[in-house]
Amino acid sequence: MEKTVPFDSSTLDGLLQEYPTPFYLYDESGIRQRMRDLVQAFSWNEGFRQYFAVKATPNPRIVSMLRDEGSGADCSSMAELVICDRIGLSGESIMFTSNNTTSDEYAYALQMGAIINLDHPNLIDTLLAAGGMPETIAFRYNPGPERTGNVIIGNPQEAKFGCTRQQLLAGYKRCKELGATHFGLHTMVVSNELGVQSLVETAEMLFELAILIKHELGIELEFINLGGGIGVGYRPEDTEVNLEDFGARVHHLYDNKLLPAGLKPRIFMENGRTITGPFGFLITRVINCKETYKKYVGVDACMSNLMRPGMYGAYHHITVMGKEDQALTETVDVVGSLCENNDKLAVDRALPKVEVGDVLVIHDAGAHGHAMGFQYNGRLRCAELLLKPDGEVEQIRRAETLDDYFATVKF
Ligand SMILES: *Cc1c(COP(=O)(O)O)cnc(C)c1O
Image (tube, rainbow, N blue to C red; front, side, top):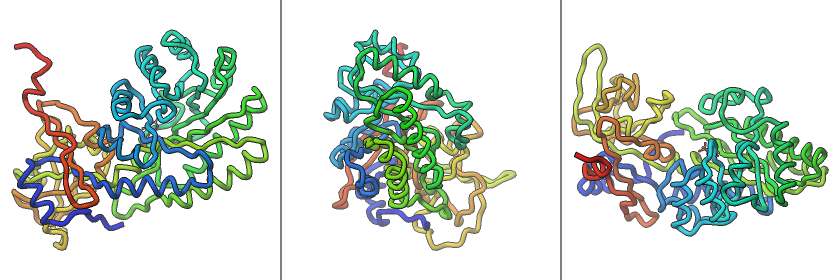
């Protein structure tokens, strides 16, 4: 799909007058629409709920916007729970899917009435110490050799998440003995997946497991959480997941597997990437160019603003503003200023001829973009701006200052 931007150049020029680069710009209409499309695709399931994976874009304004669209929140840390608490999301609107969890985190999640999704039965005692067994409990399944996973999550057998089938069954049994009365099942084995077939196979695996759980333990699951993992078409040639098709295929499986087995669970998902990823843009300016053995375009953003290319070799499309129609005559590395050679936002990228002062728009940075920011080399986190449906732009997070940076140390 051709990569376009949801703002015109005069809007951007206005922003550039007001805010120093780099900054993130999110498109509210796009985010809301994506959420609505997902809910629509699963509207056949009474009780369907999407829980936004807060880690993707942990900005309270984004999470409350999604709350207003009916979304719950998927949290995995104290800070993510606090964001939700402070915007009034609690109770079964929170899915606490953590791993390697501390007792403090469980205590807070229990206080909020969150649905606890245990990574492993060895956390039952931690949970009991934190406040007791809640009425509703879920487990995260790791299928091991049953599924092949993909590049971001890796091979399930090597993945640190979840528990085996035997552990899962033993876990439900113990929680039931300890007083739990409502049960759910969860997995998350693929990430950034563009193939509908793979996403559907995850649902099929969980549906079959739900039937086994009923046979073995007499437990009828009340919800099945398919996880997140719907991909983003980062490259112009990628095809986005057709949510309607995905929903319809899960519906078919539901009717043909679960209903005949006497099961009628709610379907949950906890997507992050697909909800905000395509609707966030990192805006940066070219500050230096040089030619050595390659041509380098130095920008004022760096890997600490967007870690995905350095971390996973991820592709993010780049538009040079005002040069959209020019031929791609140069092959360059777009680099930041960190003293690390993987601080590259693009490698061997064909771009129009770029000059100092040009503004680059880095696409599909709305999820795991600002969120993965860090302060190495004393590079500070940048601002986040929200483009509203009426065309107004609001700053929803200011840029960090040196005072923020030094706030935790003594001289
Ligand atoms: C990251 C994560 C998600 C969301 O994944 P996306 O790829 O952003 O949809 C959902 N659930 C868990 C447990 C996660 O760790």
